[in-house]
Image 1 (cartoon, rainbow, N blue to C red):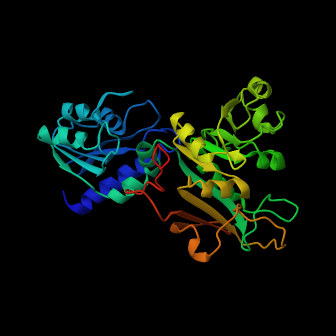
Image 2: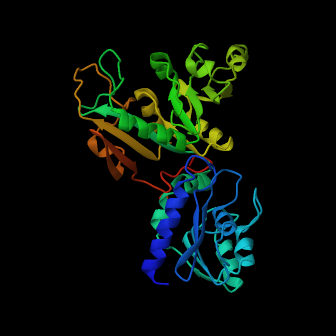
Image 3: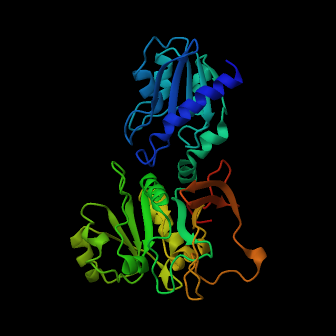
Length: 380
């Protein structure tokens, strides 16, 4: 088929892949389309963690015999046994004659082996069709599989004069309803949401996804001295939504009140009087957390940037002015001395939500393949 035709069907596969957002972590988002004589005879996507992979879903719903057909898939087919059998076996069983792959799978269990098996069986394989888009949709998976640490997206909303709260600390609401809906969508796409004890004390938020059918992220509370009230809403609802406290408190007797509420306590090392975020990220990766939506105050945001754990930034800009020398800004910490020492960002998207603007950007020093700032499992 022509390059234009391949791109057309891969776009369709990408749209299917996106339907799994927030449901398959820490697995990748994958879509697949089966085409025979120019007609789609089957399509599918990875719908949920532990469920059939996209290729098998597409082949299971065939409307005609797949012999001689072309399979379009956004990520290289797997060739190993996990929660499901290898997709390469299903492709061979259905006598697919050609496979078009969007992006290679960085998982060491696959990493080119899937394509090689198909070619050795006589199947024509075309690679790297809409490769950048296929990598981008799985930037979280690519980062996690390579580094074994979560992909961290920092989010904040500020006025046009750079304030995130008034001089007395009020911040509800800076943005309008359309922007807040997008925030809840992003909460549902990430495995965890992180904030600090100061935010819990000031706002007593639920930190949940309020969209119908939305997945509830694990709530991560950075609380160095374990000072959060056990009557806070995040603690009271810990039996319904997983809630983990990241703390340096070694007095295990103080843990009991939180654990009785259903909270989990993760004891971590201290750095500069606070939870060591680099160590926290490593531990969370070991716990299977592949992505974090960071909704912290200025102190936690500053610490996260200093620890170099942030890969992506979502800045909501509202057409308002708070003014006031004591009004808060989004990033705390010591900051840089000279402008040329600033953290460099690369804008990837600008979107409008009502009157508000969302500026999406990634750190300038990114891993190959759009994976975001690279921190290995050893923290290097």
